[in-house]
Amino acid sequence: MNVLIRKWKEEDAARLALLANNKKIADHLRDRFPYPYQLQDAEQWIRLQKEKVPVLNFAIDADEQLAGACGILLKEDVYRHSAEIGYWIGEPFWGRGIATAAISQLLEHLQKEFSGICRIYAEVFDCNTPSMRVLEKNGFVLECTRKKAVIKNNTIIDDHVWVLFPGH
Image 1 (cartoon, helix red, strand yellow):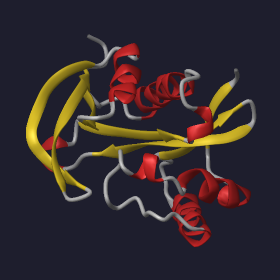
Image 2 (cartoon, rainbow, N blue to C red):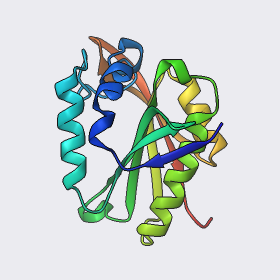
Image 3 (tube, helix red, strand yellow):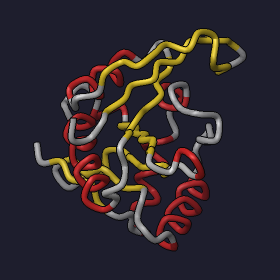
């Protein structure tokens, strides 16, 4: 399977809305990710991404089909040498290695474009072991488990912080 991360295009909106409108996906993401996810949410997201420089959020294609999304959140102030990553894959594409390949490309992009980054991390809800495996396959290590750190769907759960130190 050919996996590629790329810039968002306006014509991605309908497919993005279709894939993202899935409670199983929303349950593993922060509350700012809307659910239900509608066409206007997709259009607004793509519009916002087209204006951003540098590019920090990408579409994930699998065999030239939109399959998900990934992105980078550059930290600020005393954390300015750190970056957080996030990602999701549409349910029809689960279990096919797409996230692992996409995150590998995202890490290459991050290290090439932002050379001062010395810490890359991702936060994963307790129930999302497939996501933890994606990070592990990309060289991340479990730094800590934050007990009762997240409230999702009115339930308090643990959060796992996975970290990668580029060049080490």
